[in-house]
Image (cartoon, rainbow, N blue to C red; front, side, top):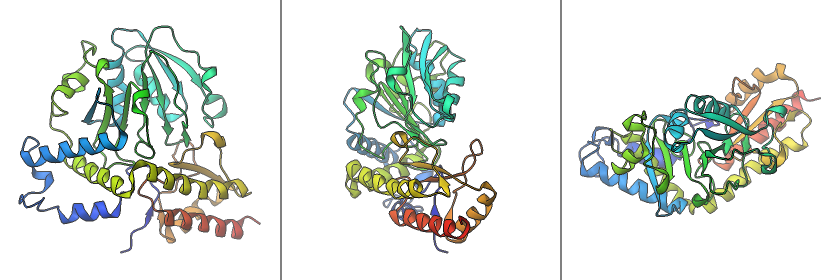
Length: 361
C-alpha cells in the first residue's frame, strides 16, 4: 500500500528513512540481539543511544553549556504544571501571554499553583494575531513570562523573541521546535512534546538554564523536579526509551539534510506555497494575520462550510489525510512539519485549486 501524505497535527509524519532504519533495527539493534524496546535503560547499549541523541540535539540547537537538556515524559500538558512548580522559585505571580487554545490550557493549569497575570491576549480577535510586546502589561515580580511560540490549533507563530529582561522567558515550543535555528540563550526554559517534528508521542523535551533549577516548590513530586532529573541525566525514573531512540534518528536526519538553516529554508518554501494560494483565492480563507502565520500549522476555511465533508473525502481519495481542523475551531488545517515533503504541499494546493474550480463558481 502506498503511503499517504499525512497532514496530522500530531502525532505527525516522520521521515521515511527514519522509519525504514527503525524497522531494520527492530529485532536486533547493532548486533546486540535485542530491540531497543527491550533494552535496560541502564545498559551500555541504551546509554549510548541516549548520550548521542542528547549531543546531536545540543549541536543542532547550539545549546549553551550552562543549559541542561532533559528527556522527560508527560507532554506539554504535564509541563503546564511542572513549569510553575519549578520556575516560581518562591514568587507568587507568573505572567502569561494568551494566544490560543494551548496558551489557555497553560494559564488554567498554572492558576493552581500561583496567581496568573494575563499580560496580553489576542482573544478579542479570536486568536488571529500575536499581541505586540508594547501592549503587554507585565508584573513587577513575576517568576517567569510564559508564551506558546506556535499555536498548533490556531496557526499562530512568533517570528520574534520577546525581551523580558531579567525575568526568565519560558516557551512552549511543542509544534515548531527544530523547524528553524533558535537562540536558546534568550530563553530561561524551553519545553515541548516531541510528537510533531521529533518523534513519537511519549517524549517531552526540556531545555533549562542551570541557575533556574534547584528551587522547586516543596510539594513538587521528585520525578517533576528539574534538578533531580538533571542530576540523574533524565533517568530518575525509566525514560521513554524507544521514543528517545527515534528522536535520535530524527536528529541525525536533520543534520544530514543540512541542519536547521536548510530545514528552515524548506519550511518557508512549503508554507509560501499554501499561503500564496490562499491569499489569491476567493473560495478558501486564511484567518491569521499574515505577519503571525505559522509555517507548521496552516488553518483555512471553505467559503461554503457545507462542502467541508466533500473536501475531506476528496482529499483522502487523492492520498491526503488528517486535514480536518481542530474541533474547537472547525475548518481545515494542514500541518506541514519538517518531514512533510514539498511534493505533498504541491499536491494539496493542486487539489485545492481543482476543488475551487469545481465548486467555487
